[in-house]
Length: 448
Ligand code: GLU
Image 1 (cartoon, rainbow, N blue to C red):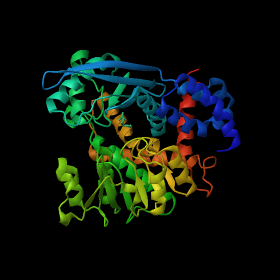
Image 2: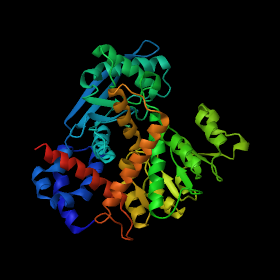
Image 3: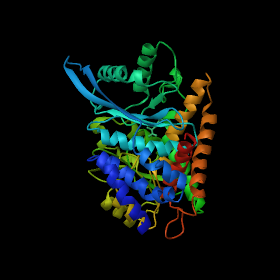
Image 4: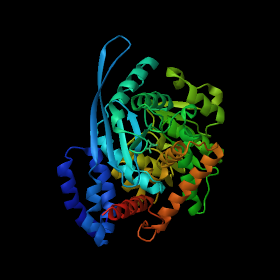
């Protein structure tokens, strides 16, 4: 970081920290963006006067609510839910809902803040929000999940609407949960409306919404490689997670000739030294419980208990699990393993020292707010379809998704002059922060 950026960052972060003391993830996300954009703000008197970035660190509102529901034994359970409506400058509040144990206001706030930049980068009319609950869906029966979803939406429904705030899924919240919640909202509102995205197609959802984040991640990565004169063909990809993002990223990458060598879960890593075959991937994605830890021999797959995906020889890393999943040690393992590119399917999956290490080793890094924006982009297309009472074909959605990811990549390339690494390559992290900031700043200035 330059001395100038440093001098701007310290007093700025002091003020933000005073208002958000103890919210580690939120402060981490703000620091990362502030470091890149404060010099841009300073160079533009209208942005400086409007205190654009500092205003962006304050969400419009944080809604926090209790969720009480009954489990299968008839016992009362209590959880906490949040919806952080960050900004509706560019369109209705928009962003996912995640149900994970231990979720905190700090995590939801950091995700909503990042979402503002991500949604801005898509070029679509989308504001920003995020929400969720400290609820662990794993091990719950279908009936329990349905009761929880109903209780959750009963609390949230008065705060959302197709032109107000449009939640979607995220970790722990998939099409089925969205379907239940859409029904609760429609019963309360007594009208039909595209109030949630990621709906099952039978309920007015969009083709390819489920696949969108993973496919988009691969389209962005292909564009990044293309800009350096390379291609995805035969590249070895170390992937983490085995949820919605990683599974479709793996499928699309394999379709494009890449070799996916790892997937991971809470208990360890599945490693295919010669790359996953389609059969091995299908098997892993449908294997349940402990059976997943003992892959049949003929699949060429090994489960490494407690193992990490990052120490295997690879060209590209795609962290698709959760925030801060790659620390300094993992980053060191990656560079030792020969990794040259990284594309984030998860939001903020790297700690700051991991980012710094990879940057100094010359690894090109596509940040989540650009590389995983395909999910929210197709949510934007779902909103367009719902508002027009129309349905697009899968081919149409796929074409628009690919165009959107390429347009985001172009937007970042255009920032090249002020956002390049020591070796002259595009600094995609900085470019994404700056390009997202510019769109938000222009809207803020236009709003007076
Ligand atoms: N949760 C996804 C994201 O982080 C999707 C959000 C949405 O579709 O609204 O971008």
